[in-house]
Image (cartoon, rainbow, N blue to C red; front, side, top):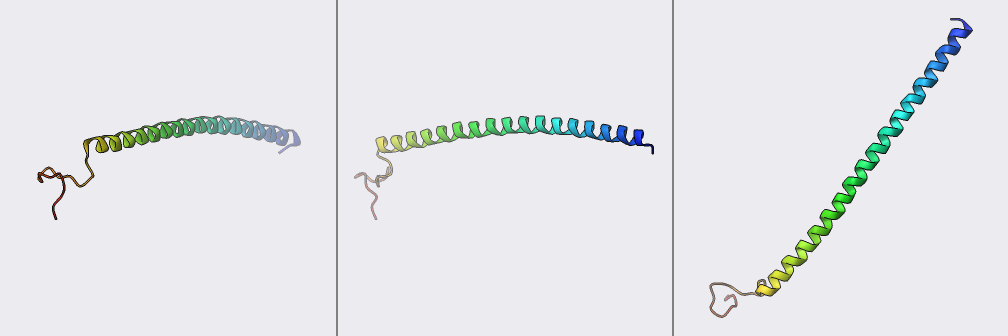
Length: 80
């Protein structure tokens, strides 16, 4: 190969490397945005779960469940 051919080949390699880096940067940015979206969704779901758990506990307390009451016993306490 001539010196000119080597320089052209080197230039093509540099251009291809630059294009590959740009593609990788774009791909990485897309995936980071996607991950952030999923993380935000997980936070929202966790907040929703926390609220539902609080609501259930409140409902259980209001209904008097979980205090040893039984629908079978007339006194409202489990007989043992």
